[in-house]
Amino acid sequence: VVTGSASGLGAAVAARLRAAGHEVTGVDRRDAEVVADLGTPEGRAGALAALSASPGPLDGLVVCAGLSPAEDPRAIVRVNYFGAVALLDALRDRLALAPAAAAVAIGSVAAVFDALALPALLEACHADDEPTALELAAGLDGTRAYCNAKRALCQAVRRRAADFGARGVRLNAVAPGKMATPMLDALLASPAQRAALDALAVPQGRVGTADEIAAIVVLLLGDALRYVHGQVLYVDGGAEAAIRPDAI
Ligand code: NAI
Image (cartoon, rainbow, N blue to C red; front, side):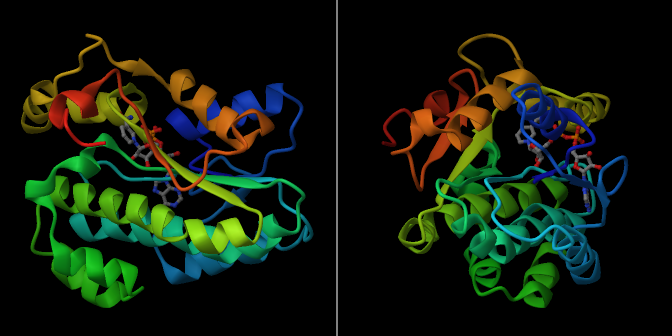
């Protein structure tokens, strides 16, 4: 199951998996096997109901659907945190039925900016208190809501390492840097967002391709990386290392 399969990184992941012979069910608000709005409890329930039409073991899950920092801050928290975690948690037991299942959440290098973290919002996310999280998000700009939603998502992955690991399911996050997708194009079209993006130094000196994220996601789903669990992998041309070189 790949969410956000209609565009950008999710589409690249789905394409790589299909090319390798896997059966992929895409979940997106458009152009997908399961069309659903992961930003609402009803939409998430609808997606899960549609996915349960073919029950049984699930080998892999990639939660990639997301909104950019240019969107409404509440919508960002709804989709990028609550939509992602709802699917991780609801599909955990079906993943556990497969012999060597793995799940990957798509975070972001934006999660590492400590100065933008809002502890109350992070706590509300971890408490699964969506109304409080949305109230707090309403007072933020899109960039700060995005940074916190992605930070909470990466923390949610690490906080679930024990639980998922005990069930034989590997869970990791991939945190992309600047990747060439329709989302990045839309951000670059806005002068304010473009300035913020330009300020993010990329040691490798270029934006990445969607397939460079798909490659690591597919590796994480497979057997070659079977002892990698509970990690956040930055796939960002070195951006995270440049921001905080001493964090290990
Ligand atoms: P994109 O805009 O090309 O694709 C996002 C997909 O998510 C779209 O197909 C969209 O329809 C879907 N989606 C959005 N809201 C939804 C909802 N409420 N319900 C169901 N589906 C929904 O963006 P891109 O770049 O492929 O982003 C994918 C993920 O990667 C996002 O979570 C994004 O935050 C993350 N990311 C992207 C970066 C980049 O530079 N492109 C950098 C870091 C993270």
